[in-house]
Length: 293
Image 1 (spheres, one colour):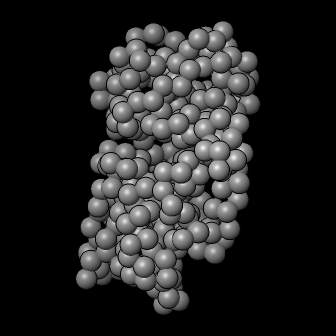
Image 2 (tube, rainbow, N blue to C red):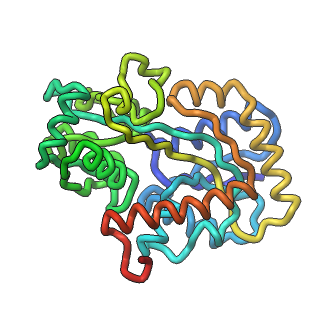
């Protein structure tokens, strides 16, 4: 028996790191004897995983990584599948973001924020209306500047875009910086978090630099629609056991994440609230299709 674990971004990405860690944690716990196989659907981030789940209604041996793209992609009209048509299983963690600059610039957080405040800078992300876009606009707005948003060629291209001068600054997760910054092109300038990150204790927060912008990216897992009560109970038992393992604790520590479990029913309610928040933010950014406004 095999679990098909769809991952909505490819190897080296934050969703892939979480999927690998969860599979290892399940193995350590011994709570699931099935063999877990990770499946890359990253060519269409979020959308491929959502549509794969929707095509396997009632299948108890399938799950997928889940992040805010499950809310954003339908709002942007990129897929007809929404989180309401799937089976949220559990929110797992809260991830933080970093403000990044180019290593060759030698800027620190304060000087980069001052530069952003003057206007004329470029930031980037994987798609219009994505977290990189919305959070980048929020940072620029908070310092009173305007910034141009540049689309880059997927998650793996963000740091190369910074290195090559296509963008001047970016926001990314600690795991993205750790796995993508192979040539040392990017440097963290500030943590977009309420307090300093344990893995980067010398890095100031935006709040310490006088910019009251905070954000937390949730990550979890979803399953196909139409699961019966027995399948939900099995997944709850397996996931609860995995979250108590050393493998999972090591993953949290290594990636600067905070455990934030939320079980199936409250997770579904949370997603409904997230949909409202993202609709408001995306409308303000001018990226919602007219029919979604």
